[in-house]
Length: 481
Image 1 (cartoon, rainbow, N blue to C red):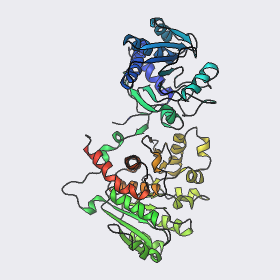
Image 2 (tube, rainbow, N blue to C red):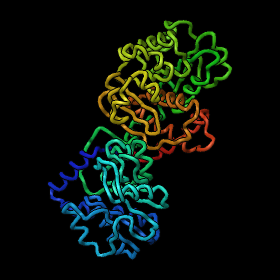
Image 3 (cartoon, helix red, strand yellow):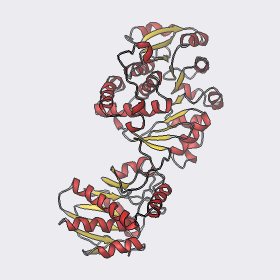
Image 4 (tube, one colour):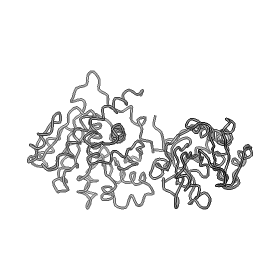
């Protein structure tokens, strides 16, 4: 089952719909506070807890947290920024019978609970709230209610000088955009999504996790043979730049494509031949030769170390005549920087572009700056290109031209190594070759790529990634569908 990511307005509407359907708003607040209290109890023994309460409903949640922990015998107090200003917050404050200090005036605590402001905050922190946010950066245990105060719920950006930094953030119903985009994602720490009884809504924006694409993940049967597992081709570069294409080809093979062929410029064929085993090799002289060799391919990779040359542009045009779904990366993106419309005119919805931010800017100048987020930029780019766009980064976004989008949440810093992206293109092409729809293949490829990197950790190099994919696949196939 896929999990939606919500805007602040969508979350507000879900709350309002639940109340309209008969669930009292105080009941929702009680459930939210209970979820936070349970998350604290699951991670800490009874200790000294300061609950920082703001004047709105986020502060109301905080009063519930304090009451429920105190009931369990914990040493809890509230530090109030201001008197409660909403009816529900006032009601919950009246139920709190423990100590109340002005914000910043309480004793030293073991756990700081940030219940000052929720995801709807639209102004910078100031005064005592700003001081408390700074103090959170060095505190050993900070739990945020909904989102760290000072992080914009719809962008993940800090509102002003700084924001709270949490070890654990407990949010409700679903992640908001601020939980998944940097720097908000880093400020949240571990995100716990609590079910408080709201009805689901398909927002078209999803967490990129296996529930989104697991049912479509290719799985061979007793009747499967190599041809039925799909045919992928990878266009190679010159004899001095063969590594990137070989990484892509090995990635496509390891992810399950039945036949993978590296299409090499004729003068580089001997160099490639010395380094290939299960990946096959076919040399070509012209783009016409290339199209003939790729005629039966289900998916084709072009770009890794292909060269920013007119030949790369011609080779891409040749591949578009074959019917294969294209995975376009690196040099095959940059070569169109002055005439991106020439690329978009030959793409279709089954093709995938995999730019990093610099390549994205070359093809879609100004979109990232126009934002307001990477999600908006990727969606706009996918619609402009008429193809799937995977915008790489710590918060990789995958967008389809029909408006669907997903944000990768399992990224790892160990993937910041040369050649890592070349393997990703191979993973995506290999999944498409096996019959996976391109948006799902891009999502699955990104998740498996990150999972493989995390499995290895320190010392990871790109050459490791293809051979780590089987462990990720084994784990995925063992999961119930």
